Length: 310
Image (cartoon, rainbow, N blue to C red; front, side):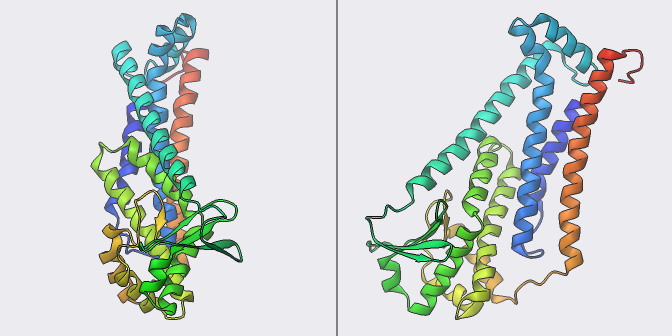
């Protein structure tokens, strides 16, 4: 049962990389895909922890607890002591890499906030617009209180006012919906499962979907509409930063975003949207239920060993 949990987690980690971002509205796609990735991550870690528990309790001297765990998990975790010890090492590595990836991104995001003494700060509703005095092409958003939309003077000098509004509208979406948190979660998954190609594809798809989400909402409110966002994207294609922050023009997303902006805006039916969310939550509940069932069967093995079918 425990290997099945791990395999199920790996399957979930593969799904977003195999589904086209062009299906449906990118806002719904992003939320669902990230939920699937995080559920898969949690299943893999939980399965490895259950597998490792008896061996590592024994190694740490908790012999009685280890004996109880073996009775609980004996039928669920095959492979003996060696497999359990290996699972423990793997889960520590995965968790450490995931935490390290998220922490690194959060640290960079905090450093990207602009201090009040630098540049021109203007409060615009729920965020600050900051113009920094550099000739480099920059446009990005960072969280905090309040969130900041940061553009460079070089960017303002490069494009006209209407395209500037399109760029700012894009970044406001990132700031308003807390996309820096999405990026940190993606960084955790990407760091922990860099060795697993389907997860790398899924992380790249979600990153693209985040940018398309901002493009679509910006196109609905920008003075020049979708074509204005597309023109700004092509004009300042190098205004992006690294993948750690929500910037306007990550180079690896430009061609697909420009192509999507050439099409009419996606208008998925309410039924399709609800069906997507329901499917994701059902998958998460099934995964959680499987973990709870495995735990329940383990407890049954201890309290009533004659009744346990495993």
